[in-house]
Each structure stands twice: as C-alpha cells, then as structure tokens.
Length: 113
Picture 1 (cartoon, rainbow, N blue to C red):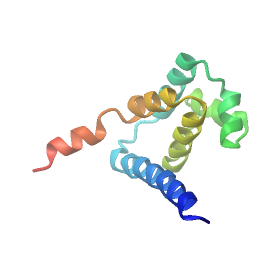
Picture 2: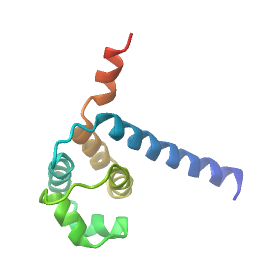
Picture 3: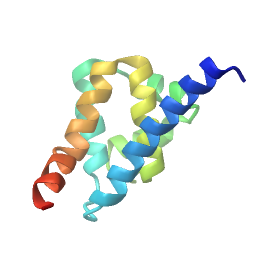
C-alpha cells in the first residue's frame, strides 16, 4: 500500500471511528431513532432502500427493517450507513448524522469545564 492510499484509508477509518465513538457516547436507549432518521433522509433525497442496500452490500430487507423501525442497526452499522450515504449523496449523509445525533458533541462540550 502506498503512503497516499494509506493516508486516504486512514482518513476513512478515522471518520468512521469518530462516528462510532459519538454513537457510543450518545446511546439513550431510544428504539427507532436511526430508522426515523433514515426514513426521512431516504425520502427527502430520493434514495431508494435498494440503492442503499446495494451500496452497503446488504439485502434490502435489512434496510426495510431499519426504515420501518422493526430493528435498530448497531452503532458500527450506523457508521456504515453514513459511509454508504456519502457515496450516494454527501448532503444526505450529513442530514442523517444531524437527524440521528443532533448536537450531541456540541452539547457534551458545553457541559465540560
């Protein structure tokens, strides 16, 4: 692996780790938050459940279950959703993170001395 490709790889890993860490800090036990955020983003940006499933290498039924709040994705999977959305529409990825996490990091920083 060249240093240029390693640099790009590390940037993606750091991005994914950052999202994962934020998710772990934020878990309030509310079922369906990811599904609600996903449904709103897919609808607003005209992204099909199938196109997200293909981008993630999953069956559409997994996306369907999140979309309809039958099942919540894991924190790691939410990070994968963000990465897949970035590949489909970067604005949709940003909207998903904002809807799902809100201002978690901003709120946390305000509570620290």
